[in-house]
Image 1 (tube, rainbow, N blue to C red):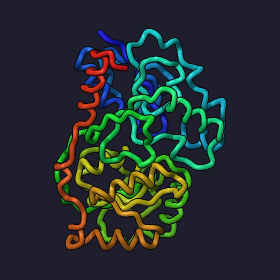
Image 2 (cartoon, one colour):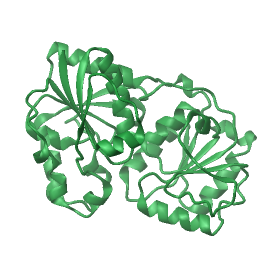
Image 3 (tube, one colour):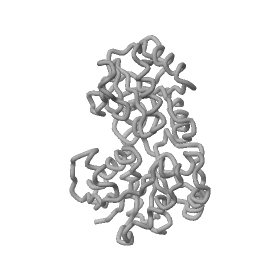
Image 4 (tube, helix red, strand yellow):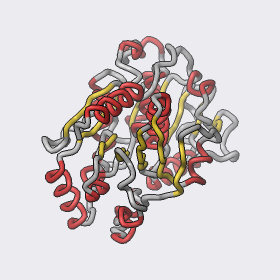
Length: 332
């Protein structure tokens, strides 16, 4: 039985959700997994426990706040790891730093932190580049969202979307989503207080927990990420992070994006989302509101790709298959 250390970035739940899905398929193939992630945050996401799946209470500390504040001690998280030599393989979502251990490693993800944000510590960025240049690691990534900056130093293993397709959607509700962006949360709360979204043509408007309040009109509902709530959507408006993109596409829900403009990850995501006709990128709130109103009408909805089931899905299973194949062939 092979032993894998799965180290997961704790910024948002997208990394966690993808990693759990891949891990489930690995466990079915008789793989033992030590899952490095903050326990409290893990069980906030899911209460389920799995056989051969040991959660190691570990937080890499890699998040937008620490990166932008240049908290270098927080960025040196690899030094806090226990001995990793007992593992047959290390999987890292999506943290390059672990390469410095010089152990068998595969990366998973569709962006690199040092390429995604501006005004980061130059020494840290250079170190990230040097690790990629030295080790030229494999990276498992969704084929539809490969950023243009993925270099020749990355050996790309392309798979489909990291989950299964749910069903065609024909409902008429809106989701307003900010994700982990504090600046976007402040902006959207301000807009909600000014009642900017109140006259949008939806009976129900779902809000993510970061911006929801009971003080708003009754048409605003707390979004709980359930199948029922996703099935109720026709459009998502907000930050196009990979987690919400995967969820929305699996329910045929297009995204009208709005995000912090210094975030290259979001720029790459919406650019690639537009290529498959499932995303629009207005340049300001006024245009965004106009687009939401325009595309909420059925006659204008045809511009979006309503056959997301024709995209390649189950990338999580294929990722697990590729990982096992690499282990067996001892190719790393």
